[in-house]
Image 1 (cartoon, rainbow, N blue to C red):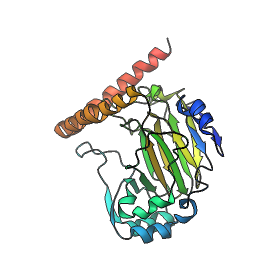
Image 2: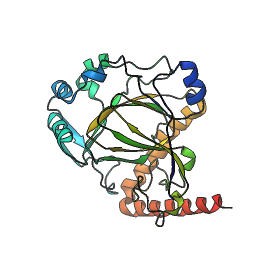
Image 3: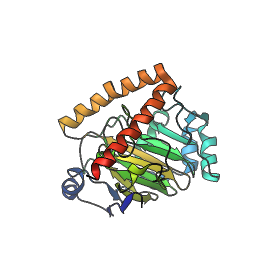
Amino acid sequence: MSFILSAIDTVDTISAEDFKKNYLDKRRPLVIKNLTASWPAREKWTPEYLKQVVGSQIVPLYDNTKADPSKPINSKASEMPFDAYMDLIMSKPTELRIFFFNIFKKAPELLNDIEIPKDLMGGFIESMPAMFFGGSNSVTFLHYDIDLPHIFHTHFGGKKHIILFENKWKTRLYCIPNATYALEDYDVANPDIKKFPSLEGIEGTEVFLEHGDTLFMPTGYWHWMKYVEGGYSLSLRAWDASTTRKIASLYNLAVKGGIDSVLKMAFKGDYARYRERLAVKRANRALAKSKL
């Protein structure tokens, strides 16, 4: 036994009333199959079209390697022209992925191909649409977004495997202190429970997104993603209406993220190893408490 994973609720369409009552207010994830049915992007955003509008712009690339404690968080592994990268991910397996790419700065006309789902909720951060690209076998490590937004994550291309956990499980997920990501030493899809016993029995949800599917990820949800096939996704972010959540977001950005970056750069490997030991200690303590 390891994680207890259930299927994510899935609908073709949903009314604003139903969405608010059963998913937004309750902070439950949901897949909406046809949210993008009227988007030009659903058919228009082929690899060839994106190569045409973005061209040979050099883009930073990331891989599945554990983060180097001597470098800033989200340091790139390499870089290459965008059109060459697209050819790579659509032709063969690779770990290389593009992280949080504002493709709209290079090609603002792409904004005409999407529709922000304001009929479902307000608070969208319209200045921050971002895209993510990956080849088959590339993985986004388990984390939650530090600014605590709600996210509408729409996928294009081949299948994408996603596992989600509520934020309440963060300690038992071996959350790194002062950060919003977990130990990178275990495989979320197939964890070694003997080595990481705190993971046993944690409840989550799982989905394989297909072309055009939109995943609603509520604020604070932990997410792990793997590209089963080469593809790309668009994330639209929205603030939670709660003032408390907005304050927590600002705290994370100004204090937690700032402290972590300063200590990481100052103490490098020693700080990284200390935090990992502390994450394991806290996870074991939380597991013991859950058994009382």
